[in-house]
Image 1 (cartoon, rainbow, N blue to C red):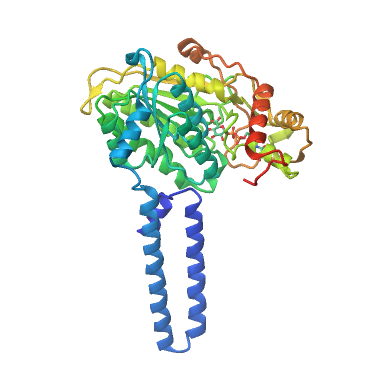
Image 2: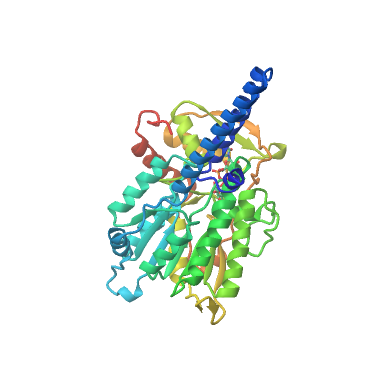
Length: 439
Ligand SMILES: O=C(O)[C@H]1O[C@H](OP(=O)(O)OP(=O)(O)OC[C@H]2O[C@@H](n3ccc(=O)[nH]c3=O)[C@H](O)[C@@H]2O)[C@H](O)[C@@H](O)[C@@H]1O
């Protein structure tokens, strides 16, 4: 029971692995015990007793660990509610025109930028983030501090915590939910598939249940992914192209999210806007992404691995700068129509939209590297290897005409200019001494 639960719901993505390791050790230990004492029956029984004792201790430990880390009981109380109300307060001249937004994944890369942009124009923002350790949580804490200094409060909690969500909607009648909490990363799904199910499927459903029951129901804008196009080779990718050939579990969970949100739209009248982001990059970005880890390795004099496609074809991505993405997110929130349900019943058909948010000009990975070399004034040590079959797609290229018409979305930052801003941030954040701290 315990093991199954851990397998399905690792508290943080890395944790499942560690505990599996401990389990193997435990088996190895018991094998050794058996070998030593098999000669005498009494000793054997003692060994069994000791093993049982160890096992029950371990399971108790992990039970305590799991329950406390999942749903940290660090929320609730009058002070907490006051912080939330103040963070959610609309400070626009015409308050009735303002939004009050719950941003999930607020300590994440896109979440931080969107929260700041909303707050700066006077909207109310409350953040939610589980601060898991998929990548360095201290970067997430730093983003949280940045948000706090702008009056955005980020709650430490998981979107799977239905009680917390219900409480939040009780305290604030959110007009919108910007749902950005997810297990990101394409290749990591091979290592920790359960984490994708936990956040991108189970977490999404828990969140939608809370939104469906909230009164008033919020409109939902959420992050899908360019990876849903999978092996599609019609260029550029349009929203109407097929998305039933995902190349990674990550892509499959995002595609599932599009279908799941559709059912909540259909049954309960939730207003839904799904955004297919194309390889978003920029200051305060994600350390697991190529542009970020390449920068770190180049500065530290370490080699980088550059993947190449079949027949020595370079991989390419429609890299999109964060500020452009933020404009697309705000445009989506501003044009989202109200949800139409109450008390779990739909009153009328509700809006359901899906948009590509890309840059429309793909750049190859070797070009990405040479732009970084130029900005960093250092040469990369490149290992070029054939793309392993672990979820990558050869290229992405967005058609953004639908977002342009409906949202006024118009990206203005090319990769060269965007990476310049990223490198500037990176050096100021981590220090000039060859990338500063290790990540
Ligand atoms: O567009 C998206 O939807 C996705 O964009 C990125 O995924 P990806 O495009 O794979 O971004 P990176 O992991 O930064 O990789 C960019 C390119 O660099 C390549 N790469 C990556 C890592 C590496 O060590 N070497 C290398 O050549 C990859 O094959 C890929 O072609 C994000 O990581 C996903 O979370 C997001 O959903």
